[in-house]
Image (cartoon, helix red, strand yellow):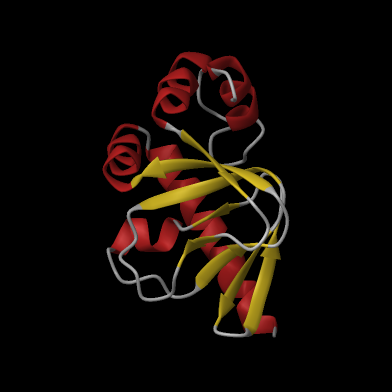
Length: 138
């Protein structure tokens, strides 16, 4: 079980949350649910309604469409933010490739955070822009 203090330290290491004061990180840590996964566990499936975004505390996951792997993500990576923002179905599935620990932040909680902290919205745009550029290069 990850303590609130450990969650705060972890959140501080994520670009998306780096600029927030510790008090606000503590509030986010309180709503972030720990989600342990075994290798092979699916986080969510393509086509599902997106109800949360995820932060990888440890381990690795693959983002895939069927058997086609799009990318592997590891410690400190964020995923699931697109569906949280636009309420569209998930564009891909995510499955753990090794035992992993995630933090899950629900859609409504995340939207509340975005409303209060525009710099986090800017951080999300940077993440999405980086992914778009990476996709364009492939």
